[in-house]
Length: 326
Length: 303
Image (cartoon, rainbow over the protein chains, first blue to last red):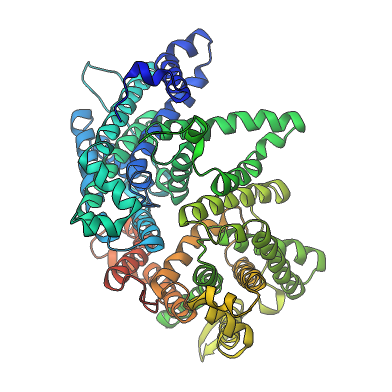
C-alpha cells in the first residue's frame, strides 16, 4: 500500500501527480511571471473545489454512498463565516472552527436519518436536506435572502492577509494538501478498510460484526466538516455568500468532479476539478474556432461528454493513468 | 373566503405537480431510472408550446401539438441515451442525466435565446368564474384544475384498465418476468418514457401562462417532483397523486398563511420573506419524516 515517493515517481500516475502538484505549488509565481492574473483565480477555484470534492470522495468514492446534497456544506461553511462577520466577529480563529463544527454536527444529524435509507432513497433524502438548508439560507432576509451578501474576509491577526490573492491561494493549496493527506490516512486505516469493505459487500461486513451504520455515520460527519472548509474558503475568495453556492446543481457539479476524476482515487478530486474547469476554458476557444460565437454554448458539448463518461468511462481521469494497486 | 381560494390554488399546483411526477415515478418504478432530465422535458414542453402557439396563433392548437412533440422528444431521448442507463447503477444515471440537463438548458439558450418567454392566458379563459356565489376565481386556473383532474383520471384508467396499463403494472413489480413472458419490453420502456415526457410537457405548457417560460424552469420543480414520488413511494401512481396534492397544499397554504402567523413575532418584511422559504422547508421536513417513518414511502413496495 505505502509505496515510497521515489518508487511512485516511476509510474505515470506518480509523474503526472508530482508535476501537477509542483505547478500548483508555484502557480502564483507562474501566473505573475506570465502576467496571467486570471489564471490564479481559476487555480484558486480549482483548489477549493478539489477540497470539497475530496470530502465527497470520502463517502461517495470510498464509501459508495451517493450523497446528492454535498453543496449544503459549502453553504454551512460560507454562511457561518458570513453571519459571524456580519455581526462583527471577524476573527478566523472563531469563524473557521465554528463553521467546521456546525457542519460536522449537522452532517451527523442528517446522516443518522439518511443512512437508514438505501439506494435511491438515500440520494433523495440527502438532496432534500440540502434543499432544506438552501431554502433556510434564501429565507434569511437579514443576510441578503436570495440575493446573497457581501461579507468581510476572515482575519488572522497579522498571520496572513486573505485579501492578498497569492497568500490566499497558498493557504487554499496547503489546506488541499492537508485534506488529501488526512483522506489518505483515513482510507488506509482500519476505519477506511471497513468503509470500503461495506461498499463492496455490506452484508458480509455486517456478518463479520462491524457496526456499518456507525462507521458510515462517522465518515459522513467528517466529509461534512471538510465540505464546510471548502465553503469557508469559497466565501472568503469572493468575500460574498449567497444561496446559489448551495443549489442542488452545485451538488451535481461535485458528483461530476468526483466521478470525472476517478471515484475512490486519492488525487481523483484534483484531476476531476482540473478537468471540470479546464474543459470550459478548452471547449470555448475550440468551438469559437469552428464557428464564431459557438463557444458561448460549450455546455451543448459538455453535457453529452458527461453522458459518455457515465456510460463508458466510470474510472474517470485516474484510470487513464494506469492501473491502481490497493 | 380567502381560505377556499388558497386551497384551490394548492389543488391546482398539486395537480400540475402530479402530471410531472407521474412520468417520473413510472420511469423510476419500471425502468429503475433516476431521470434528472425529466425537468428538461417539462421545459421543452413549454418552449414547444410557445413556438407552436406562435405558428398556429391558437393556444389550444399549439398546446395540442406541443404534447406529441414532447412525446417524440422523449422517445428520442429514450432511444439515444436513457435505454443505455437502465442496467447501470444510480450514480451513472445521475451523472448522465445531469449531463442531459446541461445539454438541454444550453440548447434552449442557443435556439430561443437567453431571455424568458411568456405565453398569454388564452382569451376565452381570461376572466373569472364564480366558484361559489360571490367568490370569483381565475378561469384559467380553474381550467387547470379541470384538465389536471381529467388527465389524472385518464392516467388512472390507463394504468388500471388497459392492456398497456397491465403491462406497466407488471413491469413495475417484475420487469424481467414480463420480458421472459414474451412482452416486448424495449418497446414498452420507450412508450412509457415517451408518455412520461408527454405528461411533463403538458405540465410545463399549462404552467407557462401563470409562471413563465425560461431556461432551467424545470430544474427546481424537478426536485419537488422527486420529493413527491419519494413520499408517495417510487413506482406508485396513487402515491404520486396523494403526495402531489399534499405538497401542493403545504406550499400554497404555507405561502398564504404563514406571513400572518409569522408577523405575530417577526417584523412584516422578514415575515413575508421567510414565509415562502419556510413553506419550502416544510415540504422537505415532511419528506424526511415520511422516509424515517416508512423508508420506502407511503405507498411503496416493501422489499
